[in-house]
Length: 349
Picture (cartoon, rainbow, N blue to C red):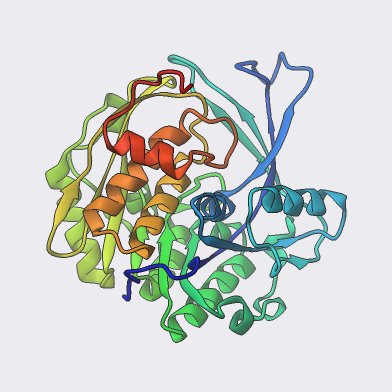
């Protein structure tokens, strides 16, 4: 894996996946009581592209959306935040939707998907010119969500990973297991195949188990318990099997839907590093894992040592918890201030 040490021009990081319309209840309303929904757009890989663009890199997002006003609205939303959308394909019947009810205290948030038959799920690899897409790219990132949508989605993800690998581009994947999309058996079959083309593997302890079959003994996130020795054993097994250059895991201690402990660990075969932990009060936790991935990638691409990149990613994601919507709009200055210890939240005048 080649990590660039200096920036003469913005690095190009390509991400591939689905973007959806998000319909969320206002405030903390429940689905059964709301009369309206707030509209925005997001999705794992789109969220990472937006983070990288926000930090000053060339975040290039690749997907397929229907050739109708809703598809265009999703593209416009990406463009609004600086994401390069020139390689987005048009076609298919519909844009996927997800509904969000934000939880509080002991009441969990709820997500309902309405994405069957989404345009990206029916996309063919032949619709994308990977030579043009990866021209000048430093990094390619995707997740386990797109391959979970359909066999065509899995084939598209594999084709993209192979194309990036053939060009010597660093590849990463966020395991992002979604039990509403596929079974553990199917996930393990597909993700095991895809991970042979991956340099950097990102995922929490549940993802590692559900997607690849590696279990961190002694850990129960519902009780807020973390066993770092168990995580290290899992990382060692994952590296032995797939040869990942770096393995990263976000660590969430769920005290309630409103308050979480948030940290991460990274492992490169030599160093096993656990970051600072933040106690976060949650405004919107959707997209926080993507904010970590985006921050970690930003750090590695711009030449930070692994531990520093992980600290940057955790701080960026801690701030994302305070921001409504899927995208992380925390600035570089805000992340760096938090890294220096300024988490007071005092008004900036």
